[in-house]
Length: 173
Image (cartoon, rainbow, N blue to C red; front, side, top):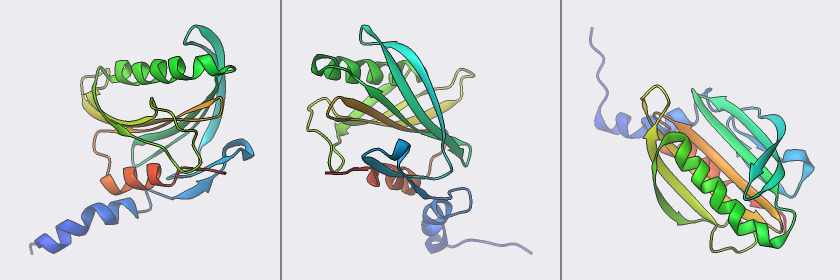
């Protein structure tokens, strides 16, 4: 017996995947801060000090994996206003270098973010270290002196999951 899906059923497949048990969406407020967003899984928190934009800065990373794809939010306090834009540039360059990818950028400013011309949502095509092709979606934005990078990366991320992840980012007014 053969089972065939018609075109209408195939058209619904991405929506069904985004709502599947692989994506257990939950609202997260990292460290009780002013940012809320949806993660498709329960994120773990890590912290470390990194050399970024000419300074040693503390980065918090909230991350988890759903449907074989990592989703994360990195938060860095720039410490002073003159470091914000160089920090945004350094994070963008690092995201592209990690997968050897070329980026397509569009403006990105979630509700409550500090307006900044360097804020953007990047879509990068590149390769993993083992040579497999990968797509990375990364949003870079600012609230005061805090610089954020939200990232979803995978070989075949459902568009609905990517849209849900980035559209739900909000900073309290």
